[in-house]
Length: 227
Ligand code: SF4
Picture 1 (cartoon, helix red, strand yellow):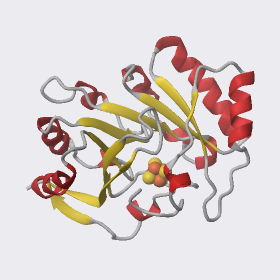
Picture 2 (cartoon, helix red, strand yellow):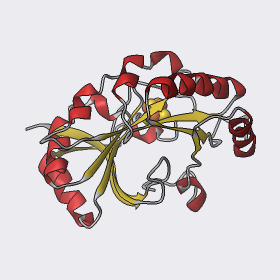
Picture 3 (cartoon, rainbow, N blue to C red):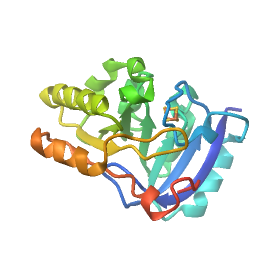
Picture 4 (cartoon, rainbow, N blue to C red):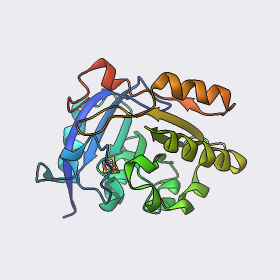
């Protein structure tokens, strides 16, 4: 029976992106093919703090929050595991499914979804300060639709210029929403650009992007899990 490595399952407020503030069920899968310098979910990719769960067990656990229609499959990097069965089961439960991916693995397959129902993609493009920017699968950009979103975490001037240049390329051929998310400091990493500086730059450069501050890190302790 297909089992998935699961870091945590919880109900919280969506902290980032276009659905910010909406109650959402998070299924955080374990494991990642990246090692971003400012990763804030290292517990979901290092060590062995995970459960191996069947699809029945996952569906039973999220049934605790059945009233909530939004589900985000996140990580780690969720696409390194075979999530087809999970997506199919969530589709049958009529959930609005978001897949939060670093964009390194081709996700065309999920654009079509199951039973004619779309999955929505949050493509988290890694900027230079992550140390992983060269690993993005740029082919994925052509699949993105208006219902999807692209997010850049920005910590440095170099990150901002990188995000600006790519957002202009995206704007030329796609109506996908683009978000700039100021990085938060974590142990061993301190961002150079503040949200105020990034906001001023967006306005000065006349960018058609949206600032997205991770509200879950403001509402709760930024190191708290399951938020
Ligand atoms: S892709 Fe996400 S989970 Fe993986 S190392 Fe980077 S920030 Fe962490």
